[in-house]
Image 1 (cartoon, one colour):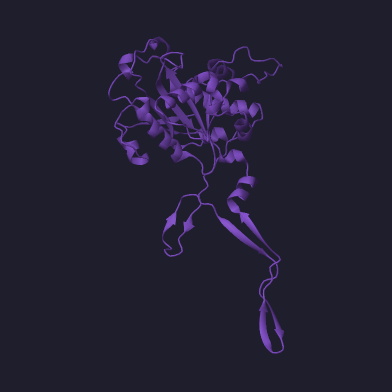
Image 2 (cartoon, rainbow, N blue to C red):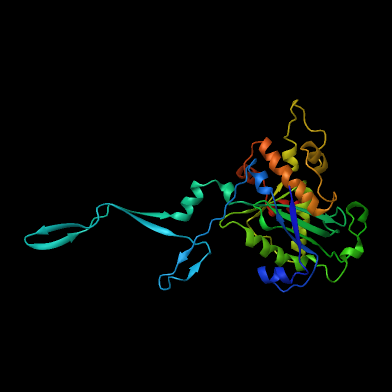
Length: 316
């Protein structure tokens, strides 16, 4: 599995693409190389659905924005003509008029899993306290693949980093004016996600031990910025899924850490452990193989996901 990384000089390039007024460096965008081949073994076969609407007055004007189309299906006898005493009278009969919401029919008739945008993500922090510590690195991978399917950046916590020995990120690396603070990152991140989200479908954020660690930190950082998470964002913790795994001899796995799962599936380590992008690459492959072993399509994974509002007690 190969990955090609593209380092931008600063946020200016991404700002021009997604919007915003930021000029910070240390943002990484990447392209996932052979991930599509890996996905053929699993369950994700996402496809982009675009509805183009041709304007009535301007045939050349098109819009790629999704639209809600409504059709009137006329069921009955149409345009039946009768003659009476030399006079023509037209009688048009409609037995019924049925309204069909095409968008709803498509949604009902198609696997919900094909509408879900799946992001595997990971964070590094200054510690374990959601209240007192801060995120210092953030990375994600869109499992749909394609250009710029990965996103990585350091984050300025504006405080001392006491645990550099764990992840290798020092205070000097992040407490700099050219490293974005979380409030600077929020609009960039939301626009990036929106640019890759499938029309009409939810976004599912996947992290290992996400319920107790990654998701609460993300939600808390948004809260500090007085920004609500989009209502269609959900979170999936892969740790409970790992508890369901059974080895060929019928026994459970002795350890459920990300490193133990990587070894169990024979996945090579890319980069340094406990760095966000490396852990994202690892979890992306673990999720694919674990969901295959558990016979869980994306729709089942979505059923096991949770909303930010369900973590109120953790964050209070």
